[in-house]
Structures are given as structure tokens and as C-alpha cells.
Amino acid sequence: MARRRNAAWASALGVGLVLTLGACGGSGEAAATKGDDFMLEGEKLDAINGQVDAMGIVEWHGQLLTKNPDNGGKRIFDLDGRYSPSTGYSELSMDSAIGGDVQQVDYLVVAGRTYFNSEVWGPNAADCWADITDDEEGRSWALPTDLDPTWPVTSARAVKLAGDGVAVGVPATAVLTGMPRGLFPSVPAALEDTEARAVVTPHGHLIEVGVDVQNMWNALPEEELAAIDTRKAGWWAMTMKESPDGTSITPPKYVFDPATTPPSQCKRA
Image (cartoon, rainbow, N blue to C red):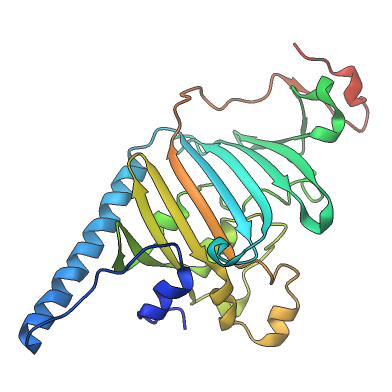
């Protein structure tokens, strides 16, 4: 399923990109054209990889939807982040409306420590963080298992040219571990050798990604799919660019334990 290379893939993605593959003339000419296209799509992906590699701090925005937004997909949640490839440190902010419960929480992952801040603590606690490294079970569900947001590019396999971008196959393992672990706590065995269909497109300094999660689920037996609470998740839309803010990602200045210190006692600097 996930490895088929056909026009239906591009149609399902529906990101307004037109595949530029074509073959004309005799069989020899068509074969040469196909070979040239393969080189071009590989070079295109290599160029995008090079653009990602050159980024200092990666600024990214990810959005999980029920399906392709061009087909009326509804938002499940948003993630905004800054990631430092040189250190592996991350700043993340999650905005969710899952189950009608609107909430916004922030995370910092620095030097092996994970910090948490919630808007329900009020404005006085905006600069105050809880160290949840040893107690992540209930409050780190919005953190990806793999914090590196460049997975749609670095783990991709070039398939076809798609307008200004390239259609790729992304291992399902990378897709699920790149999304919040609370939504996808593990990778089902049936998906281990499956690829999700995606399109990666550069727009100047910005790289845009659309991942077809919905069709990825087709590789799962119905009983396994029924056990996944997030089976309605069908589309991952993402942008990434080099952050214009060169500020290093550092531990929070104020850290407290909300189990013993009321958040209201932690004031702004």
C-alpha cells in the first residue's frame, strides 16, 4: 500500500501540487525521461535536506487534522517549537481542543531534563516551571518521542517530483514517533514496514510538509485500528524554517514543585 507510486497518491495528498512526470516518444526516450526524473527527484530531496542541515535553530509548526484541510479536515491540535540540532534541546508549546477541552501547555527539554508549564496556573506563573523528568506520565503526553522536527525530510525516500517539491515516502515509525507520544504511545507492529505518503515543498527559507496519515492506517488490521483512540487523525501539516531568534535554548530561571508550592507564589521576574 504505502510503496505504490501512482497518481492516486498525489490526488490523495491534495496539497495543490501537480506531478510533473511525463513520458513521450518511443520506449527508449520514455525510459530516459523516467531515469532523468528519478535523478531530479533525488536531487530535489537532497537540496531540501541540505537546507535543513544548514539551519541553526529550527523553528517549526505542526498541526494534526482529521484529514487533508483541502477536503475539510478539522484541527485536533497544534504544536509550535524551536529545536537546536547541535544540542538536541527543545522548546514546545501545545494548543489542543481534544474532546472539547481547550488547553495550552509549554515544555522545555534541556540537558536531559523535562520542564512543564500550564496556562491554568495563571499569568503569575508564566515564568515558573515544574521539573517533570521523573514524573512524566501524566504531563508529557504532548511531547514527541523523537524531538527532532526534521523527520519528514531526513527520513524520507524520494518518489516523484510534485510541482516545486517532491512526493516522498516516510516510514510510519518516524511519523508516529515525531508526533505526541500521548496520542501514539507505540508503533503498531503492522506499521513497522509501512510508509506514509507525503509531499515536501520549499518556499524560499520555509519548508512545507503534508503527511497523509489517513492512508497509512490502511496497513492496519481493523481490530488494531479500533484499539487506537486517535484513528481519526488523518493529516499532519507542518512548516519549518531557521529561527530568526538566535537565542539559545536554556533551562528555565524559576523551577518549583507544584505539589508543594502553589503556583500563585511564583511571580514574574
